[in-house]
Amino acid sequence: MRPRRNRCVVLLAIAVWLLWGVAWLRLDDGDAERRLAEANAARRTPATPRVVFVVAQTRPSPGWCQMVASAILSNVTVVTVGHGEKYAHTRRVFWVAQYIEAAGLRDEDVVVSYDGADTLLTGALTVQRAVERFIATTAPSFENFAPEAVQRAEATAPLLFTAESNCYHPQLTGSVKWGLSKGRCISAYKRVEGFLLRQKNALVGDRRNRLHFLNAGGYVARVWALKQAFMSYRALIRLKKLWCDQSAWGMLYLWSISRDASVSPTVRVPFGLIGLDFHNSFFLSLHGISLGRSIRLFSPSAIEEVVVEGKLPFPPFFEIRGVPRATPVVLHFNGIGRGGVGLREKLRNHTSWFVEAHRTEAALLKAKEGLQSDARVILHGIGGKGKEVRYSDVCRVGASL
Image (cartoon, rainbow, N blue to C red; front, top):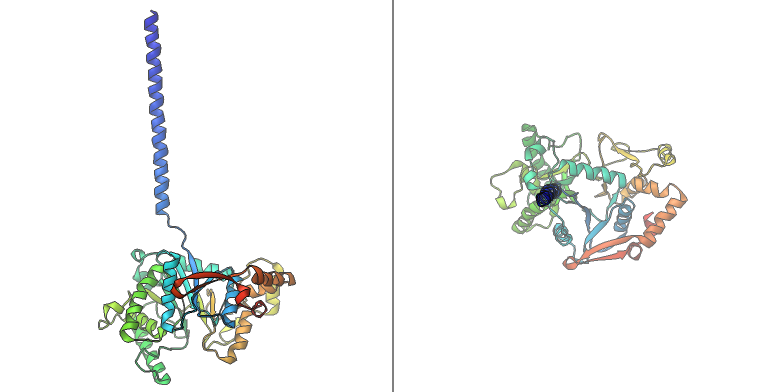
């Protein structure tokens, strides 16, 4: 009886061991499946796009210094490209392209590029809102790009240029005589607008809004879209030996809409790839703009109410009349001349970063000390090589605040 009992005990132990082994394998398989599912989900979930601010500037200047200060106080790191290079309008986007490669930016990342010497940023809150809107409404890749969605205003063009009131494309029609060139430039836009209106296309600017001509001094783009447009831009300036980048970008924009069959495919971009920022979702060109008629400044008492409440970051303290959802990150003081100095100063004083810095003596001291001791400037120069220098080594802090 004892041997049989021993055999039963052994068999029972083996059975228990087998059951435990099967259960362990199932648990292990479940963990493996769970880990595999998590890895696949991570691969499917797109990473948050990087957003980089880039300006083309060959050497420091007072205007550039104030722009960089406005960026720093808006919590933006701005990279300066072309440092030490010989300036040429058409080279600006080449320097941006070099930086994109050097920084290892991905196709879904976002580049904000604008003129360095006659611009100011408006503040951290506006930057946040504008960037979030652009990312939410633009295609992260060419595969996701839907021209018809841009046409219906359900999406934003993935390469969005500043819209301005001045039609300045001197090489658009082969004439550099100002009056003749401007007239032909306006006529070219009218023809395209007529085409868009016949198509009931949302890309056309409202004639009551005078800001509807392309300005190359500011654009925001998904990297994939800028790369694609850059290939056509590069081919065009070589083909026509252009010196004016604004004329080149204007041609590409107009041809993308008219889809002129006589234009070589090498210098055409897809319809809807390039758009204009009619609604100031990122840029505001100040050419032809006046305070009061076009822009309403908040009163000192209205500013004081926000300051007393003390909730940071502050909103901008001005409004663009007729554009309630405007989020102009970059103010571009292009073509305003010496008479525009007062306009620049008044608008600067109504940006959120300026009011935040001046809300108390302690806040102003902290802002100045930050610019003097901690702030850094990133410069990319010849060959795309980059370096970092202290802001106070290249700029006078007192002049910026």
